[in-house]
Amino acid sequence: MNLPQLQAAGSCQSTGEVPALSQAFDVVRQGPTKVVRDGRRLTVCHKDELPPGQKKIITEGKWSAGVYNIAGSYYAIKNVCPHAGAPLCKGTVHATHQPSDVGEFDPAYHGRILRCPWHGWEFDIPTGKGLYDRKSRVATYPVVVDEQGMVVVIR
Amino acid sequence: MPSELIIDMDIHPVASPSCPLEPCIPDSIREAVNFKLNSAPGTGYANPFGFQRRDVSGFNDPHRTIEEHLDPLGLTYAVIQPTGMSVSLIHQIEVGSGMATAWNEWQVRYWLAADERYIGSICVNMRDPEAAVREIDRYAEHPQMRQLCICGESDDLYGHRRYFPIYAAAARHGLPITIHPGTEGALNSATPIGRPTNYLQWHTLIPLTYQAHLVSLVTEGVFEKFPELRFVLCEGGIAWLPHVLWRMDKNFKGLRAMAPWLKRHPSEYVLEHIRLTTQPIEEPASPQHLMQIFDMVEAHRTVCFATDYPHWDFDDPFQSLPRMDEKLKNRIFYDTAAELYGLPSRESVMQARSAQSPEAVK
Image (cartoon, rainbow over all chains, first blue to last red; front, top):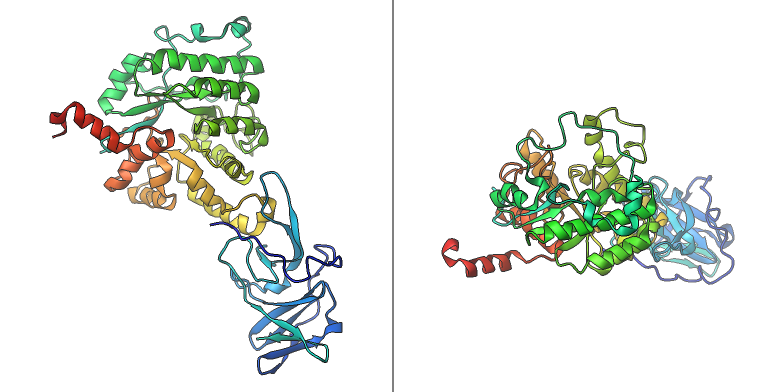
């Protein structure tokens, strides 16, 4: 088994506006946001309420996801760790070291690596891929901003 | 019953008047040895009942070892793990490197010349990588020198990059590196908490050192850097391995960013690059429990038979292992070690034998 190499995702690698790594997303102190469903569309909030470097945890019944603004791009990832069922999106967001040569550290993926709050397993927010093996993946959902500027998760 | 062919991964001949070490010592350190500059720290743990079996005495002579050990047990090959495995502990570094040469010359001159079944181990001074590489380059060409042998005690855990030049040379020549116990506690305490008080404790705790070296080798990326390299953990037990594999893999999942050069799970490197020897085999009340451990560590690719002749805790090939199927038996007694050392395959040995004496095979 080889570990995954991640592709650059959206604008989160290209702008200079990525907040400092581990400070980017602090532990959420506010409660989750209940969302309103319209067909497959779950309206989260106005985009002004979700600036870069912020996230919202949303719920609908027992289902929950984290909605992240990473440098102007929006991503939603299911709020369950595939390992032991932890509320994944309560984890912090970091950079990490991408696969490198022996004895070298190669920091990468700034502001987009979600670290599970329970055991520290790493997931790439844009793709949902676990970094610790090739198979592991968390569900992700498309996010759009509608004409009114509302952030909408497609579920 | 063992398989028809047997490689004994661990025998310990000693120097004696019939195979003296003294003439093999290089001239450059001869006077230094007279000055006792070959002194080295010991563990301080004595076995009160002696280190050798009481029923053997041939280990100080290559021909008597054949009569007493190789022939009666029907060994196809026997791997010499020489006293020189611990030259790295000699205080005076130049003398340590010179004594490595002495022990290599001693094997070639007396033992490897005596019988093709003897497999030699290149001794190297791990504190002197330049000299160690020269030693490897010098002796690797000998057809019976098939590995390096180093002691379990060391200045640093064996994943440390100070040893990389030695690993590069071993990998270049396709030579595995055996770590052999006996010196644990000579430089550091034999346990992280403090010094055991007697040989019973010390001998039981040898796997602690092995676990430390193993985790270090894997996580420092030695097998990413040297994909051809193999290590043998000799005489350090097997049953502890599943725990270490599982713990290392679990930790890796949360902490992999500390070792980003690992492209696979740690256990995968172990199963591919590490071999373990059987003696002293764990003897649980139910032999089936050992077979379950064998299953967990993929014994068909990782475990090789050894006797430790002539030491006190010798394992007999006919008595020491639980019943197992023919396929696994063949792997453990011969095939895995033959592949490790590049020795003739089971098929080619059997063919050669039947060509020599067609009657005997019938």
